Image 1 (tube, rainbow, N blue to C red):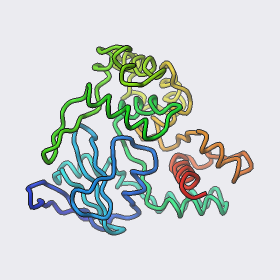
Image 2: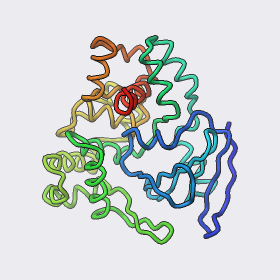
Image 3: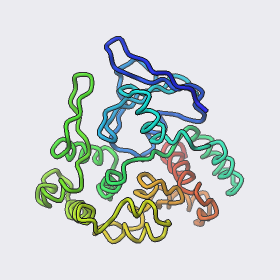
Image 4: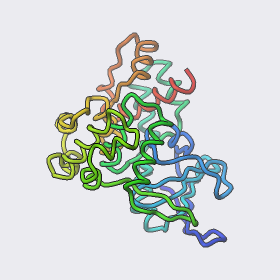
Length: 291
């Protein structure tokens, strides 16, 4: 188990330093396409720093060594109750990696797992994850981030940090209220009607996110697919990154390419059980940045 220490910067910003943290790489975790609200920053002089807003707070995750991370803008209580869970620090990734490699048993899966060492699946807000991956359809990461940033600045709540103004992710109720035209004005394109439909269904309780989180995987997938414009890929991404359903295995063009190239067009991800989504991230990251 990791050790934590609560500190203050010279300017009075609270932070927590966690040591003896196994198998975590802040750079890879925030650079693998699972999260769109965090960007590389240079605020505190660490090797890697990623700052952004989650759960209504702005924080900076930093790392200088393999087994130590720093979270700026948080107290010990918030670290233990919010950020340790957000980073999945309670999950044994060594055991998961061994399971993935032994179950799939190919050289490529072994290489992808080693290359992606340190990636952890973030436990993001359910609504934010769902809405973000609706926006991700037929889109690239810089543009996804730009749209989400505009959405947050226009309709989110103000979040102050170190003299700078940031914004939280707008609620489903707020996006329902503003309507399709206002969402479209933020250059969401055809996705505006999908975002609004999701907002209405969630705000009205027709889609119960808490219930989906507690459901088995297939019923949860089917429930999200009731939203206009949400298909298997978007629903799988939302479930993996926002609902703690790590058996989800989103298949996009990158994954299709990797499966065709390295597995002869077939990949039995269901054999991995709860490790399937983690293997997907390893394969995606390796294919995108190395293969």
